Image (cartoon, rainbow, N blue to C red):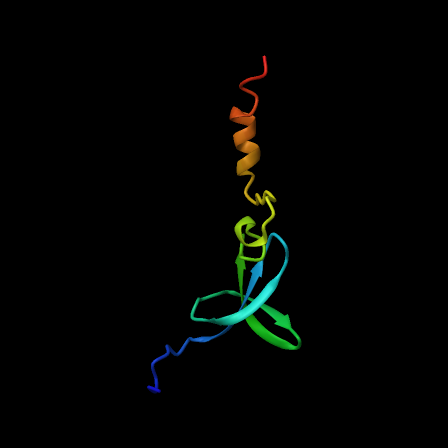
Length: 84
């Protein structure tokens, strides 16, 4: 294998799904400001709104995940158009 092909910032990083609080660790070069302690070890933390553990395509559930209030905003504008 070739030596020195990975960037110097390539390290283990924790990704946290904010919709279901699941955390997984993988290697990445992403820059973060937050950290998290898992099993006595500190990892850089990246917060995600949706991952494969909460996305309806991968889970098979048609669960609505809305962290920014977009669905409520849409329903308040267009949801009651047929009711008169």
